[in-house]
Structure formats: C-alpha cells, structure tokens
Length: 327
Image (tube, rainbow, N blue to C red; front, top):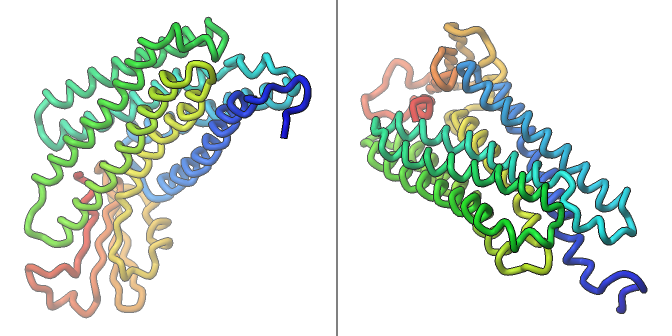
C-alpha cells in the first residue's frame, strides 16, 4: 500500500526507533521499581550502599520522565511535523549522559567487589579507569549531540566519542565478567551448598554483564551501519536500565532460602527488625532463624529441619546460610 501524500515511504525508520526505545524503557523501569521494593523490604545495608541504590533509582526515574517527554513531543505535540522526528529534544541527556553516569557507578561497584575478593588493586584499577573513560566519553557525546540538534547529522560528527563510550562500556563489562568468574571459581570449596551458591553467582554475573555489553555493541553497530536513519537511538534508552537492574539483581540475589521453606514472604518482612536482633520462626518441620547485622547484606538467614537439629553430621547440607553476604 502506498503511503499517503506528504508522508515518506520510509517513515517507519524515523518513528520506530524512538517509540520502541521509550516503550522498552518503561518496561525496564517497571522491573527496576519492583526490584527496588524487594530490596527495601529485605535489606538494611550500610548507608553508602542504600544511597547507591536509591540514588540510581532516582536517576532512572528522571531518565524515564525525560524519555516520556521526548515521546510526547515526537508523537503528540509534534504529530504531523516530520521535521520534529529528527530533533533529539532531551534524548542526548536522558540517554548518553544519564546512561554513562549510571554505568559508571555500577561498574565501580563491581571494581570494589573485585578488589574485596582478590585483594589486588591492579585489575580493579584497570577496569575503574576504563569505566571513568567511557563515562566521560558518554557525557561528552550527550552534550555535543544536544548542540548538533539533529539525529541524522550526528553520525558524521560524534563517531569518535560514541565509539569510546560504547566500546569502553562493553570492554569494562567483559573484563568484569571474566574477572568475577575467575575469582568465584577459585573460591569454590568442598561444600555442595556453597558451590551451588557460587555457581548461581557466576551465572548471574556472566548473563548480566554480557547483556549490557551486547546492547552497547549493537548500538555502536547501528550507529556506523545506518547513517541515513537514527536506528541507534533505540538501544541506549534501555542501556542505563540494564545496569541498574543488574545491580539490584546482584543485591536481591542474596535472598537465599532453603528450597523447602514455606514462609519466605513472612521471613522477608521480619528481616526489617532492628540491627543486632534475632527472630526464630517455626513452620511445619522447618526452623528458621533470622539475624540482622551491620554486615553488607544486612540479614543472615539460617534454615534447618527440626528433625535434624539435635542430630547433625559435619557434612550435612541441612543448614543453608546466606553465604552471599561475603561474595
């Protein structure tokens, strides 16, 4: 079917990237909101960690609001005006700038984690320098894109800055995944329960960092391969949300319970008790003890079978502790 008079046949390539990017942004914001609520219910971390979580969530809320403002002007206020589809509006700031800041904080957190696990500052420092470099390039990309004020003309001007931003981000994520996996594999022992927990952390680390690195690479490929259309604008709308969700997934993964526990939700709520206290709950044949401490994770959960409480062998896996607190 031919396009109506006045509407170019390639209109989809001008509208779909923005629309899909904003829609994916909304979806990941909803997932992030649920993750932040779970974190709020289950953990009382140190103030600096809580500031990191809630600060990033505030930034992501601001980013989603700006993205919504972009969509409103592209598809509502500017409806029928084809020229407005090439205007970046707030997208240079809610995508490259905020994405770069969010990715910097998340990657620095992983650098700190690598330093804690390895006690070596070399690898952590290398990744931190790459993270700072990519964040600086991302902020520069956003500022210059706002000055250019045309999505189509950006390719011929911003290639170096955008390549450093996205390439550095992908490199940092790859190094984090490799280093964390190596350190966690070396920390495995002979206990089945601990090895299972470490295996889950390794899987989570590889999956999350590989996903964010892939999105950065896809954005760079679209930027270089499609000079005529702003297809590259869609992936950056989700890049920052991927980093934030990665961080919350790591934090919330510490909620580790024995698979037969029947009162998990109640246990999470009871974990909001003051520091230094202990609560013991009993359900069916399950005995659950919650100790809230000042440690990184805030709460430590022990679950044992009542039948084995007085007859426990040294190699028994009947007790499962939140070993992730140190990992």
